[in-house]
Length: 339
Image 1: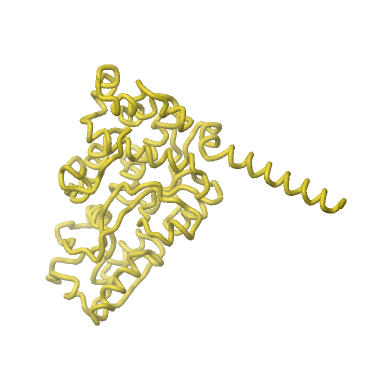
Image 2: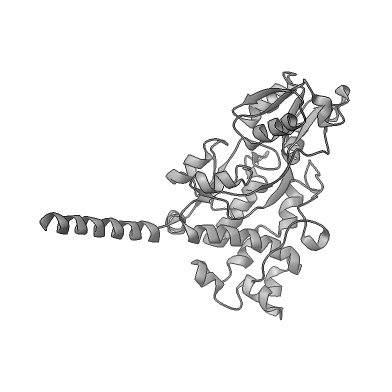
């Protein structure tokens, strides 16, 4: 009986400890620290890179700033931490970073088997290749027997291999541990093609001696979704990250911008808009945030289209057409549920 009591006391202690650990989740950690730790991948123009003022910029970085605006009320309270593509899972699990925007493809085996969550997709794309124009490559079939560089262990590797195998075609695979290494190998002629998402290819192409010598094929090996990752088991943090993404998309649905959101918050007769901007309802309270968290996201970082345009679209050096990354009503894949 004594052993039974001791075991029950020990079990109670473990359960209590688990309850405390769950209560002290990522949100509490970020608020106590006063800073969001954002894990990013290899420096990639348009996604995460240092500008001339030594400031981190890019699509993924902006979404970290959007989360910081929602949680801390200040989009600048972000510590950007380059952790690399392969290390991002452990960095999340260990608490080294609070969110990772490392351009990972949203795949079921990652979402279910690696103790991380993908709260929502924030970029739709696919896998294609960049080649030199002089090679006159017009299709993936033209690369039969060619050497294709790609990042090691990524979904790119499996997707490309499956595509060629299904058609009975052969190619030579040349993997590297980092996207920067892949780009360098391609630029030095070690491979005939550089495979990854079109937006990443466009970013790397800008840095080559003569960008016009390289072309990105329009064909796609697959259609994929990219999204930020958070640690599994913290539903509150998962909800916050997802809601921030939806807030930027909803801003486009409702015509909200950095310039007009504050005024609309006071004057709109649309209940969903007022709940998003914090002048009606208790959504912020439910999430553990201030009432105006959505307003802070939009006024400090912007609507989805603004984030896309300045980093990847018409306001960037890459000038990539949004394609799938438009609202459903405009022929894209984005939609936000009602607030």
